[in-house]
Image 1 (cartoon, helix red, strand yellow):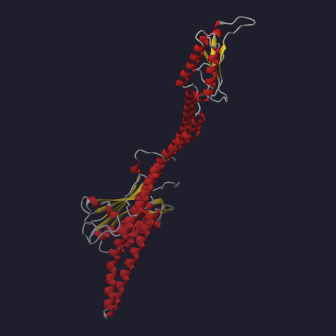
Image 2: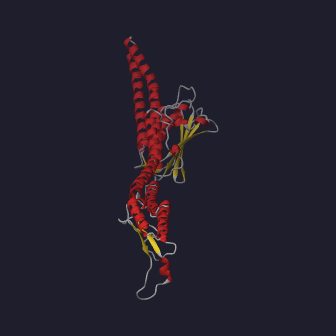
Image 3: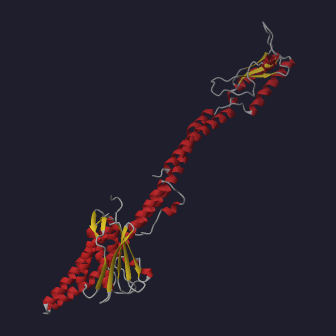
Length: 446
């Protein structure tokens, strides 16, 4: 079974999930990175504080510097001081690298750890690096104040929104063909038997497309069955109306004192014809609806044809039946009853359309691994455009009153059920030729 949809969903969900986690982690890292630095405006403010402290320190008025520091601490709600930056080694010498990078606190351009509870000490060294202005980073200047909200947004809200979008896309991808199928089902139930779904799905080739193909096949078969049943019902009504009318007339004549023996014989003939018509219609419906495989018997075609032709000669004494049959023709994987009734209907049709004193030829030949049965009549034949349609129930050519009834339609279905086939062609000299192919060994037989 085609599993394109399964693999498509697996790829979308697996790759999408991995990609989603990677993107969220990447965006979260970049967001945290950007939010870990002190805002540029706050950096300028801290450096300005350092410049003010250095200016007051250079002026030598330490009391003014102290008052300024107190005012700044109250203003920023933090701690601040000016300290000397001299480092004296007790043992060993200090490397230039250490002296260049030494600081009593963090530079204002450095990253601030967002997860530490206390604010760091910021170091703004004086121009000659002899002293530094130290200040604990004011709370208002601390970066990442909204980091927890941003983290919640990135780890919960954004994935939820993205997953909802993915679910929506997958839902639309799955529901579009299902909605088409639902609409087609409703239209079909409303009587639009020509509705189809597969053409509406474009180039899709997955399980849902296979479902659409299955629906189209079901709709085509079911719709055709419904149409055929309706047409057959109308044709049956038409076919039954004539014998019913004759029966009513015969009953009326009998009531008026006419010869009841003749009338009863006519009524009996009409009743037999009606019963045969109903039985053929039921058999035809069973063959079309159930499509059985009637291939469990082995028979002799020559013996079967001899029996059928003997009955036909008795029923049509004014026609000639010429048969060319082999001494024996074994046919395996068939049905004696179905095939016999089918051939009988074809022979009867040929005799019906052959004028009195005409000739019907029946020729059975071996054709490779199949028997070929030819039944030729001397009737008027059929236009080429109607050769396929004569196997439809109650088919009539043009405005002819006499048609083909159910005989050929039933014969075609019965022959198919036994594994054979039948087709019609016109003879060069006039008349119709029926060609029946019957495999000598049905598939599955040994």
